[in-house]
Image (tube, rainbow, N blue to C red; front, side, top):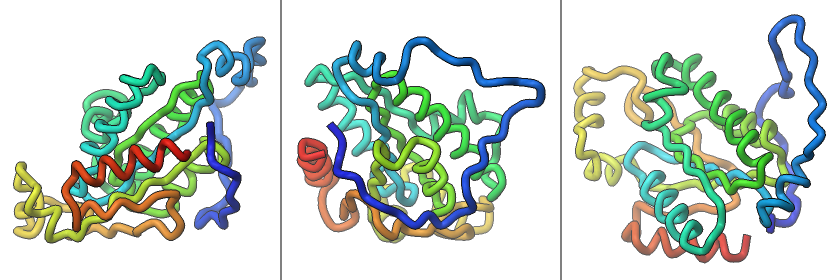
Length: 212
């Protein structure tokens, strides 16, 4: 089941559905509703966003595991994993980040169309990209989850030392250090992962989903 409809003013230009030349969309006999009935659930996308080290992947993984145990069909798209394949040709410039998240939104939409609960864990620093993802997936089946932790806390969780390298100028385009992060203005859920243990944050996410 999905949340009640909410209205948003999207901080972006209208979504334009571009396509390759000389192609026409193929009509499919099996509809999204047909696939959802077969799955026994409605598809949706839960979009976790926040700084590196905020706990996005940890929380998404905890929710994924719990829902799987309940027999709910899910899939988890994680930022690092996706960059080993689908988006392995992209860097971290603003343009590459835009394309990375466009691809993820389109893939998440296709998965939600089959009736899957899709969890995504990406820094996704720009509001315009998150708004575009919402528009691509569909306003009524997209939930933005802001994993809120100050950069000082995130840096202490950074086992790879990426924050220290970025602060030393060894890494460019690192969100929160030398590249901006635009916090969500009206997320469906905000998790204060910087001021509570991640286990408690995970419990909050699970409680929220049960009312979702």
